Length: 95
Image (cartoon, rainbow, N blue to C red):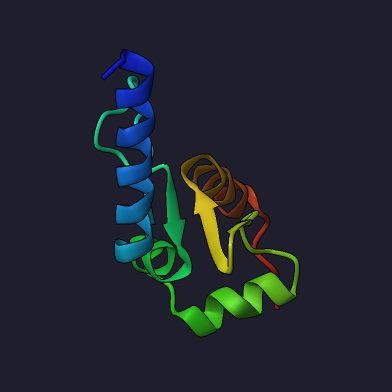
């Protein structure tokens, strides 16, 4: 099996695992073992928010950027980081 075929096979196995676990993980030489994208459930767990609050934020245009993989909605690691930075820098509303 050539190196290219082996790499494709590994990527397919990784994508199949992503569909089973709800965590998208692609081979990444810079960040081995790190998740590249999160399902909404995993994103909410990692950020300590409820799914209903996530959907409320999305409805207000304040949620993270998302991408679709088939029927699944995912949030990339980079978009999650950007969203946290934006939320941290956002001014707090006054009463």
